[in-house]
Structures are given as C-alpha cells and as structure tokens.
Image (cartoon, rainbow, N blue to C red; front, top):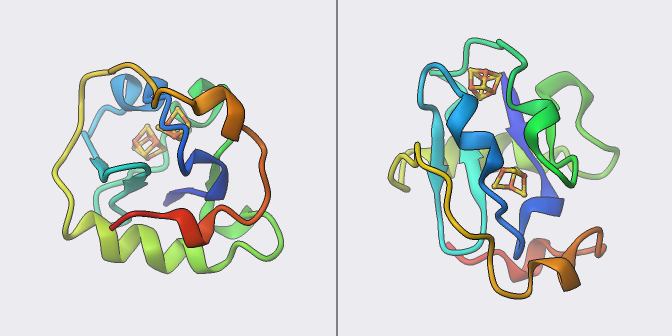
Length: 106
Ligand code: SF4
Ligand code: F3S
C-alpha cells in the first residue's frame, strides 16, 4: 500500500483524496492516512500531493518508517474523506518543516 508521511502534518492539502478509486483516505485534525487494507496500489494519489507526502510503503523516506504503522492504526479510528477541502490555514508555513511528528493530533 501507499503511506502518508510526515510532510502532510499541519498542511493537509487534500488533493490526494479525490483521485482514490477505493476511498481509502481517512482524516484526522491535522493529518491524513491511507487504510493499507483498502489501498490497491493504483499510484494515482502519489503525484497529486503538492508537497510529496505520499510514498509506497517500501519507499518511505529514511527515518519515517513509523508512518507505516501510524497509517494502519489511525485509519481504523478516523473517518473516510473523499471530497477535497481547504488546506489548513498556515499550511504554507509548515511545508517541508522537519520533525513534525510530535505535532500530530490524534
Ligand atoms: Fe488510493 Fe491508489 Fe493512493 Fe492507494 S495508491 S491510496 S488506492 S489512490
Ligand atoms: Fe496530505 Fe498531501 Fe494529501 S498534504 S492531505 S497527503 S495532498
């Protein structure tokens, strides 16, 4: 499956959700995750993210391996999102910032 990684935190652009043919994105307060049991590896979402937060499970950036388990865990708790919405208000300020994981709201 594909995995949403750290750069999405506090940005949440949501361009990714509209292309998913199996509706496997789930939304939390400041992050999105992909349900690994539903993702069919179609690859469509990966280029949609304007800040490159989506990777195949086997290719997540070094140091972000914990996001594989986080996507699985949080997708069981958060509701599905299928319609794009406005990014978080200060998304631009948070793009590409390192070490956003402690800021993840669950
Ligand atoms: Fe959905 Fe395809 Fe992305 Fe998987 S790879 S989350 S099925 S758009
Ligand atoms: Fe996050 Fe990128 Fe989607 S910022 S909400 S993974 S478009």
